[in-house]
View 1 (tube, rainbow, N blue to C red):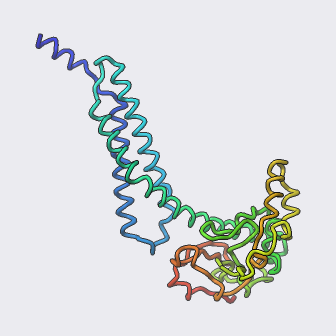
View 2 (cartoon, rainbow, N blue to C red; view 1 turned 90 degrees about the vertical axis):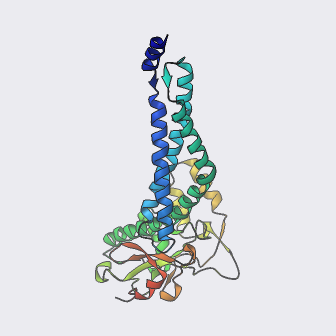
View 3 (tube, rainbow, N blue to C red; view 1 turned 180 degrees about the vertical axis):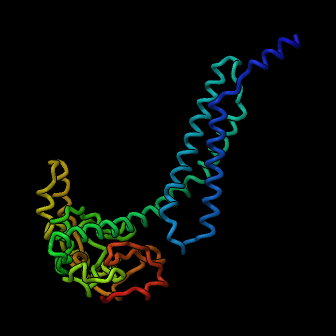
Length: 294
């Protein structure tokens, strides 16, 4: 009888799914602990590593969910094996850990993703507009778009989406811009402007006490933008948006250092585009070092 039990125990195999689920959850947990420690160290004053945070959060979320699914699958597999597979404790441990993290930490992870994701989108908008301005200048004798309608020109001639002019952390709507060109360089040739001079920056200019008194459909860009739409459904959708009210002056903004705003990023800093078309997030304490004149 003892020899029979020994043979059965030797034949009992551990479910690979149970092992994989536990490994997946443990690795995600370790990564979560590292992320928490990292956030505690950097707080809100270090912005250079923001681009690494979103991928880390996504990896953690995916890892936990995959571990949870593998754990459930492993338990079902073990039960259906009729005693040929072991690993119940491993699968159960993976389920318990992943469930605890989902209950306690996923809300915070989504908040981190939303917080840093918005900042990344704003930075991407600025960088993208820099690329578009460079292309526009190349096609128009090297000159920047005119100050009076630079937003409209970029949409009309460089196929820019109107949403690219808004920081997602701001209260701006489609048809409004939270970015302004440096008044000291408009009309110049891009090649004549030193690379470290501010070209574009975040601003709060254009919001007035009279409120949103204009409409998107009256923006210069709107009609040709709608006519370019390939999809009838999208064209109808954008046409309806044309009735949205906007601040009249919150478009084609041009200004100087006094118009620069950090409010969209909790006054930590703001995104700035330079004449060499590089974009950087500049902390509030470093804004005085920016060069505004060629």
